[in-house]
Image (tube, rainbow, N blue to C red):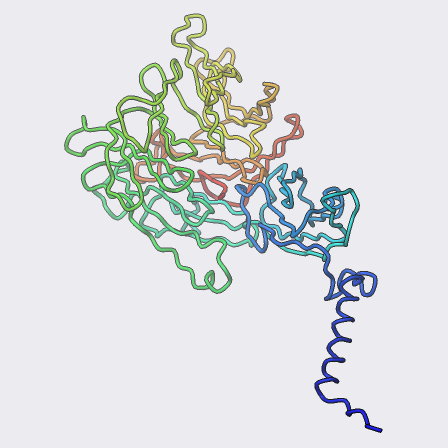
Length: 499
């Protein structure tokens, strides 16, 4: 009788592979029952992409996208989504993509952890739920909270110099050399650099009108190694060889700079110039008072007689794209560029000739009157959500000739209600700066000396020598009693939050 052939190595290998594959299939079918959602063989749904993964956010980051690899039980995802610290928001879905839009900007100087586990897939043809998703965890952070100002402390060798304070890290850095007196500054996107005008105190033949424009990096939001090696370096943006440089403004995207200039040899050669990356400065053939670049960086608002002209920066022409009649002052644009805050001097209305009216005008030329004052509108700024407008306004003191009382006002743009917050005793060269995350408003009180003739450069717009300054933080409340005014431990003027 013939004996069967002994099992070969190939037969043994085949049997072994069959057993292994059987086990894998069994685990794949019932993996969650065998070892839970953390099992390496779990075939449950997963997050394919999270747009804020390890990202450093700014106020411009208003929503994240989370993409799954299959349709999900939407409510189950929402119920199991946890952000720590909490960031209130609203959810919308488009197929396998979840969009989470913040109700308010994420507070600066924070680290966040996002976790999602326990949600289940949803079968497309029915309401039945399938496998539980693979747990997902991610982290992200916001930029350090920081501000910049022009120092006034002589003992710290900061007088007239540009100073940046990193609130989150409690670090202060002077960015400009002692010979330069900073007159004004504006911040590039993401706070990477600052554009400023300054005069050189070592040039005795130059005056306060002989400023030049410079760019300096801030050194903020760098990694640890780069921060340790950082040294501020100046870049000359616009010299004063042939023209004196007066007012300037940096576009919100950091691309365009508009400058008011006057020819040294021909004062009649006066007007606005445009500076764009990698291009020579060019005259715009426009003359006007206080001008403003719209947030889109493509249009420029300039007072033109009895109104405000809106001009294109992409196709320079003498004729405006639009004209807003009767308004004499542009205060600011809304952050999204859909509206502007303007002042009507009521010059065509004899009954209101001494009244200034503040308006909000949107891009469809719809006007909303916000308030009237017999004083002046000094500055305004929106809150990040654009629900409220904060202004510094003056009114004449009854019974006192030509003396104005400054006060802060909060205007609800939905209801039109104006709420007084606090008042000041003095108001020299005050500008408001709202924190990008809505923490509060920065402003400064300037200390001056009209008798000081030894300081030729560090002066207010009225010509008084600046001898000191105090920075303040105002956190608006519902009533003046609830509004918080906090004196910050800095000697300086012209503060601005960094974006």
